Amino acid sequence: MSALVQIRDLSVLYRGRGRRADKLALDGVSVSLGAGETLGLVGESGSGKSTLGNCVLGLVQPTHGTITFDGRDITHRTARERRALSTQVQAVFQDPYSSFNPHRTIEQTVGETLDSLPRMSRAERRARIVAMLERVGLDQSALTKFPAQFSGGQRQRIAIARALLPDPRLVVCDELVSALDLSVQAQVLNLLLELQRERGVAYLFITHDLAVVRHMSTRVAVLQHGQLVEEGTSAEVTEHPTQPYTRRLVAASLDADADLQRVRRATRKAVADSTRTSMGGGAGSDVALLGAFEQQAVAEATAQPTPRASIVSGALIQAKGGASTIETLVALRAAILEMASRTSATMTPPDLLTRLEGARADLCRAVIADGRTSEFLDLLRQLAAAIEDGDRVQARMIVNFLDSVEGDVSSVAHDRPETGSYKSRS
Image (tube, rainbow, N blue to C red):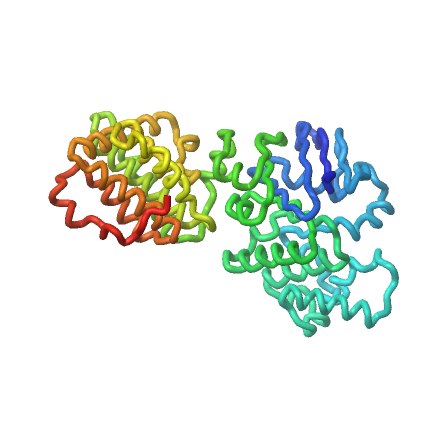
């Protein structure tokens, strides 16, 4: 099936004025978007995300390249042709208030997008507007009110109602939740997903927030300085980024989970402490560093909508033949960090990765020397089961015990989580 939107080799050059130099906002970008899909455009400020969206909307004329919509070239449409296309392509912007006429009622504002449709009676028009407002969580009393009488979240719902009223096939969403509180963000995003399932609308979703992209997008395109640096499915790009720039974006993304924030701060502190003591050759600091990374991996894994304990379970299945070797135990323990993109090998700087690998090897030698290989494997099975159940507390207790194996074995045995409280699912 052909794509709904095809963007090929798109370039935009903003001409400088006076002493200002020209700026290449987009440089040969090619992406596509299928019907009913969401393409997330991600990048820092100035990366070209909004420029690309504005090109699709006809607000910016590209210097080079083509944009096709449903097989038709819309790159250089006239104003009249664009108005006709507005029933198929709509937009929701970051600040809905700036796109509203403060002197017009909500009925007049929302009804603007019906002007290009076949003429309908006043009663039909009002009934359609009321139905759409109710769908986004507002009632008929909003019709006679003005934009200033609503909160930011309510105004964004009104903007969504206005955009979806003519049943468009594509909506360009430009940072539409970045100015909202976290709780309101979640409500608006879930509303967009519900409306997408009901109406089959496609979203070009522009944002700098990777957590939002992960929640909303079918596919993700990453822009840096106007160039496309990475593209793939949402899971591929956010969990297994291949480019250093994307990895930095993933590492910098925020989360509303307070416990997860604490764990991430603890990891950063462990990295800083370990760096200060590394000159003294402290193996203990490397073990503490590994413990912090593993605690973060567990917290990240249990915070995901679909916990990725299958990575540990799969490693356990593969390890059955040679579970008594150092190499196998090291690989099993390495699987813990691979459950979360932020702690994976691809996201870890080479110097830290070397130290983590050394700490893993030391701990696994201690496991074999103490004759505790079977206990170690049993704990990993319990860890996988706890993560699959979303039990972050139990999972972190198990990781604590794994980290304590280098110490006095007899003193930590009493602190071990109850064996059998979770059964292996591998």
